Image (tube, rainbow, N blue to C red):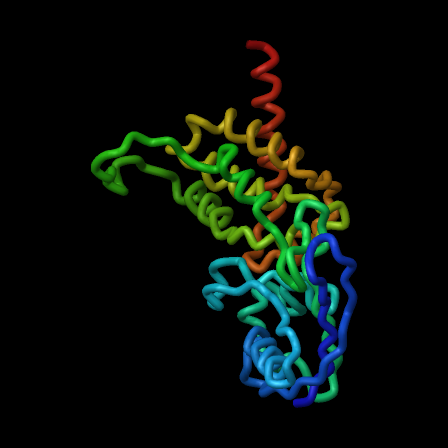
Length: 249
């Protein structure tokens, strides 16, 4: 199939970017990133600079393949990362527009690559469980109800790709933070530090310049791992409880 691909080209964060149009011939069995590889090979053969884009595992695990395709983070298929999107969902003659995540907290590094290190700093603020080192504890030594374990595992599916931020008109990172807080706070191992964790992570999220959540739910609709916004409600409960407790101490 012959496609017209309009790609955002931007030299660096200080330079104004623009869309540039390319013609590429793709096979319906290719993944979207393989189509981008073909396009880059064409550019190299014609002595043009290839398009910079993030990728790593290409298995829907790492969250690096962050692209906005025809206005939707990761493309038109629900519950799918860009690397799992295949060209059979497009037809001959289609025009595809590919842009980076546009958010204040995710500055463009080059072309389709954005700096998502703000997520790393949020995790460093409290997205972990402090445990004593030594021999691993037997998995069955701490009984956990099936329903609680299921909700924790569902939240833990978050890959930190940032699609929630790109989808949100406010540029909010609430779904990401809520998923990380939920999957740790629901389990007994993480409950001990939960109050400190939620206050620190929300504080860091605000410091990074992410917008506020206004319950539009675009984040849930575009999340490739289908993380529920019920986690945001849980985050709010945790945060209000921790804040009120700190005021009374």
